[in-house]
Length: 118
Length: 111
Image 1 (cartoon, rainbow over the protein chains, first blue to last red):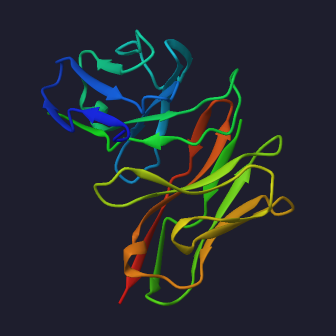
Image 2 (image 1 turned 30 degrees about the horizontal axis):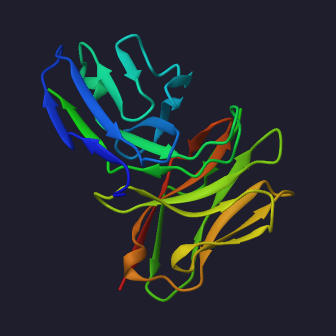
């Protein structure tokens, strides 16, 4: 297993275009997370899945953002009608979650997908 | 809601001197706390975690952190800094099924 894989690593797009990022988690991990990190800030939680169920979404995840994990394996994060404020590093992480919504998860992060909106 | 506050945005030390990165937490119950490190152009890596066992937690690369409930602190220390320790460090608290990150402390190590 090579860890958490994210593609593409870099994406440059024009304002108003749609973009999609893909995350392949560690195969035995049932939880998958999306975070956003802007320059000089800590990662901000966006959403997470346990298997194919989306258990929590942040207020940061506006209607233009949608995440899916259809078969409980890889996940996609789509941003529609991108804005310059969407420019950030989008981080994916996975973990072996315990049952329910609690648990001291140890997250393994991917290298991230950097989005630049012109 | 859980939160963490990293008291310094930037810390600079000389190689071979001690490192102290400060973190205070806010939690309504006994928290799970972590320190992660992010080297330039690299992914976030777990340094150590506290989950209500021993209050002094040892991590990788000689780092350790002490959980002090009376001070609501979880400071990260290392006896002797190495050039390779230069990176961004994040104090993190677990809330439900997710992690909440602090703003980060950039550690610079001078030769």
